[in-house]
Image (cartoon, helix red, strand yellow):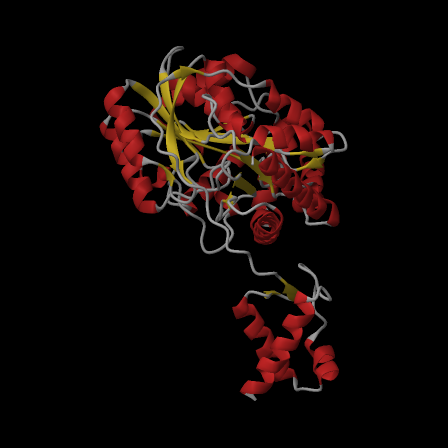
Length: 471
């Protein structure tokens, strides 16, 4: 029997390698294969398990077995141990261009925005209609946020090791506003703030809005911010804050291990430097359990926690929140002065969605969607890009960081791709000092399709061409 199921596995593997079954295709049911191959159902199931172990199949609950081509062994990007000095932040117009272009006809691989097919559209429509029927309650100023939403957020924070009350929560217009409010609560224009490098452009824009200088700290693609680099910066410069995306950072997808989160929190508390934590991708882990935020290890009330539903429920709701802790008075004042309150109907709709239990049910499918999309994109990059390309291995979220071979300009690839209606994010966007010229960030938050597959193949071809020109 052992020989027989291996033979069946070999036959199916040959069909996959010959392209009869392509990456993402669903295999025929076990009963059909049993008849086709004239073997028992148990033999087919053992063959499936063998192919799973080889990396050619993936079982999906209640859906069957799907082809998953093994990844070509491609390395992760390396952490660049650069020495930096504080510089004023100036956001690039390129960021606005990318957002505008993706409203048009371009292949959307640039902005870190989830595709509508991956969002709980029907549930949010129903919850929004429910909220709209509540008359006067939807028309008032909801400052510091609807109590029903703040209560739901407090419950969710308790589940990740951060016990808070609804009164500890300040609702914001997305995580971007939360970060800006946190920065304004603890800094003055001209102050120095430590950021990850590469860093999410939205964080760099937040620093520019507040008029701050940034010092870039090297970041490891798996473990996150270099604590050794941060310690050097603390010794050399009068830092007033540190901004970190602790779980599945953008653009590298790094998840800082718990032990390093503890070290980060204690290091900054000892230096009396507030940590502003952006945990926007925390709920989008691919496997295992929800990673705890750094805030869970905060014993000195030194962490300002920021989050949002933009990457999980809907970017257009513009609904985020923060836990300012001892800086609540300053953050509330800045919020009130800037825009008074966040819209009531989205708050009530999301609170209803959370209360009904729909959010957690949706997240289970969303995590699988993003994991599979990232795996396919990573495999496509490995197949299409030249030897010497390195690709991140995110454990959550939906962005990939691609380090091109030495001497290849990511900016040139970006411009050439744009001319062919393929939108990607060039590495220069993720630094304030011209680093990462040879890098690209790709948005994997789209259902896999022929158009995406062809776009990745074309990006690989452009990279090959640029490499040949350099040769």
